[in-house]
Image 1 (spheres, one colour):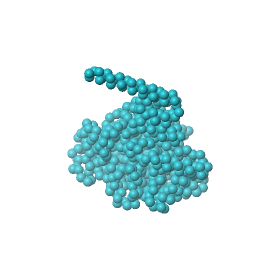
Image 2: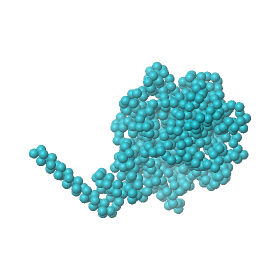
Image 3: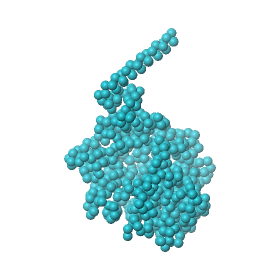
Image 4: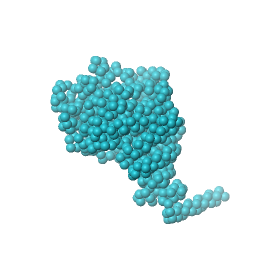
Length: 639
């Protein structure tokens, strides 16, 4: 059957489709801020298929209209078990606004890239509408927006500290992180006739309860500073964050409690990482891998990026300060089996538009597949937010040979001409010298094979900055490693007769970064012959270390104050150095470097420019004379 035409291959999005399947009711209705793409990279499709596999009738309402008579919210009526609500694959405010807080003109998760198909904060809007229409039906919310806002958090777009999202929306329960296990448990309990009000200890769930229920602090219960304390004292918010991050990265975390007035927000611990069998079951469900036929003729940009890609694992132990992956998926890697990955690769070869190229064999970080601590007991007790910073953990098995086996096996599938790695590669991981000759040999081979056979012309890496003190706050390795990796990259290209590009990502205005640091970044990358493309201004997103520093001005782990560019002028002053080669920015950069008294950086960015050097010397002489006159005047006044 052709999945682009047979509507019965999908979960129903209308009553008509439901009746085509022979159903007379639905058990669960899922509302999503994204278009419905039946693909394992889209959370709503995953949870729908998981519930379907367990025997439940599941319908999906993608991008419901919240501004008319609310017919989208009414069309299936009351489900037998519950409503599920998600803002989509992105936080709605990141989706809607730029780092300069300007409204975006497009939405990658909407057909045609059209903007305006979802409200700001859909988690709140959808949940409140459903509770108003169906007050007796449980509403369960989840997804990245709800997950990262589960406790008090800084909202960059409103420029204020907000309470837990459970205080702002009427949902009965919030699932944070990857939701397969909690949503199945909730469905089974409701199906058995239990009341949602009794669901107090389901893992990975957040609920409201009375402040009188807050227990005495012990090893199983951490009592955070209240929302009111955090609002009046930023240091309290910073101290809270350390507990939140450490517990979300534990195999067996504690329960977190935060008081909001007379209400307590209870955050139950995360599930342990999925086993290979569990994650295989999720990825092996009967996805069509296509957008729903209702979007025929329309392009969904986010889908175009991943249509021929394969996600091989979940989780990331990099612990980058600005990233939400570990807070959402955990730092422990849950890897699929080789057989499951090959089954998906074979399915891709049958897609009507497949031309022989797998666009990405990757994951949250491309090269963490099958990696874990050798001593699991040590990992069980560990509170480190990153297994790579400040240096790779000696307990971590960094052997890249399982990845090479996957690459070679996928390339051997009939119909596959080549497989690429499109996800970002942690070169500090593949270049780490373990002291084990066999593993170090495998990792050298990985770097060489990656560059020679699995780069589609451009390899993405993320050094993020060049200056050591900024990289330390980012939890990223020294930029010296980038030089080393670039040497390997250039040598392999020369050896194989390739002309591929190394594409580095960089961030401006990150906490700890000053304007002079960006000038140094510009000079360093200019020396490397780079005109930067993949750049961005730091955008604070809920529940990251970088955001907590941005808001509080304090590093949660050291208690020390950290400089951060906050206002628009400071941010623009940093961002312009990305584009030193653009004549539009040159005069402004020259003026700034004069102001910063950095003729050395000016000479590095614009070597041999006598006019610029003369202007710098003239300006210095003028400033020195003015300074002398002011000094003489003060002396005269004192006399």
